[in-house]
Length: 391
Image 1 (cartoon, rainbow, N blue to C red):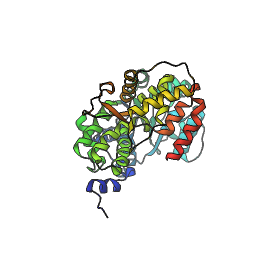
Image 2: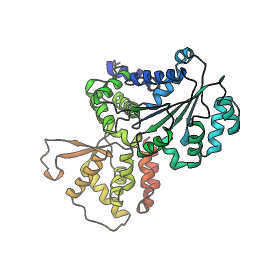
Image 3: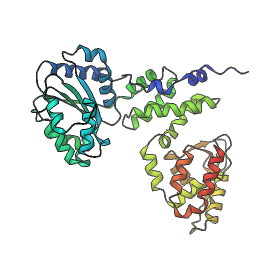
Image 4: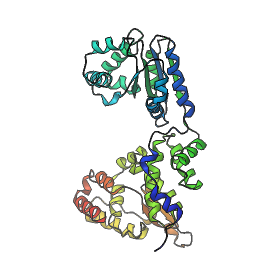
């Protein structure tokens, strides 16, 4: 029995849930800074407001949640504070918001007047966290005004520390003008991590599972997506699955990140797929009818299946030369739908040295997108059955 390589053994033992625990990596400074801000409000009997803003996925929510879980820190505060965390976008209206707030604070539903009275009581100070507040004004102005006048004011809840989390948007700056009227307001900006910092975060989070080349590739993908660290987890997971099955795990791992876009929320890839024209959708549909040899499909076969498909559904045909077909393939490859496999030893200039491709999309997701194209309705059920049989 063949012994698996050390890299494969490490990957099999790799626990995705372990790396998603809220370990602070790369935000140690911000973690301590937030605790310092909260301590400062301990010295004065007044309301404190902390606005944390920055790009999406740079660690704002993680840092705050970790501080709220730090029992040692909470216990060293002069007075015991109850903690509340609410994502305001998950509250459909003011009533829903007040119910969530009262249940977390008191374990039961209370009216706004009762909440205000309780929060104004010196004996029960709290730390209240509201996430996604930059989107609140456009979503529910009624609830926004309530927050502004009640919890973000200085007359009510004066023994509370309120933390607002927001993305770096124009809405945030408009909101900040309203919320920073209190003299006891701190604004903390979380900047995007550098490429070097992202590499270090990946190495730490994955216990050095990946070699330096793979780490750098994943880091560049994350950095390209404006430093959204949530991409690290999804990218690593997909890479692990493919690397375990491949004899050359590092190479497979690097290419696997291209598939991360469709499988794990890369909106640019999804936007492209939703905007595809009918011929591009036919191009994708014809891939399902090609022979998949160890994840690779021949360009020549794909071209023939594509022509057969548009013949069978009798759409207004446009004559595609192999050159035009290859150009369309390049567009799909640039958007992460397929990956081109090049062979410089080929002499067929018409194929531009590209003889094969590897599909990198999620099958069921692709079928869902194709099913919205009227001209493809005759073959959608067939595609669904083919996909189920292949899984």
